[in-house]
Image 1 (cartoon, rainbow, N blue to C red):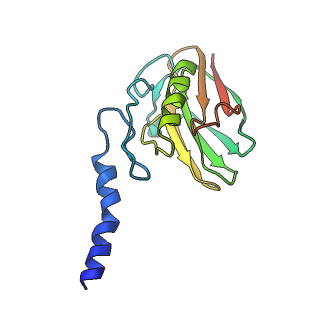
Image 2: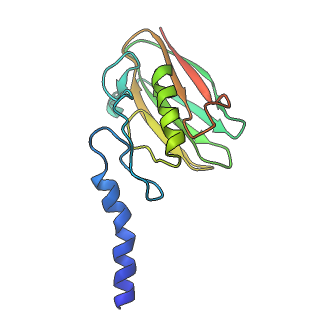
Image 3: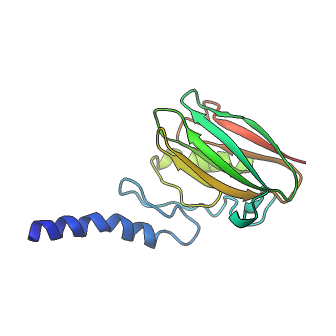
Length: 169
């Protein structure tokens, strides 16, 4: 009985750690016992890259795939200003990948941070991390005309060319 309670207690600890998270804008869920890191520079509020969209007001759904050739398909997307897009992302590879929306400068800065702390799990509205063979999604609203970038920030992936562009007309 004591062993069962110990196992049960240990099995809920990750849930408590995730729930506590880093509400200061960092990664909400530590991975492999590593603490979260500050993501306050990433776009999670209204900015030139957009903002989280209301899932009840989605105007369009776009499907993307990520694979082990370190590419997104499609790598270039066109949307209209004001559009609220639901991205359905599928990892067709055999290793984890992620999609993070932001400016190129934000993505590059965060990629450097990810190199220092590999294996971090994301809990921000502008990103989704997926294990091999998994699918997920995010909803994003594009507020301003211009170019918004997205990339996989797992160390080495962006550097290998795993980046894309969203042209906002």
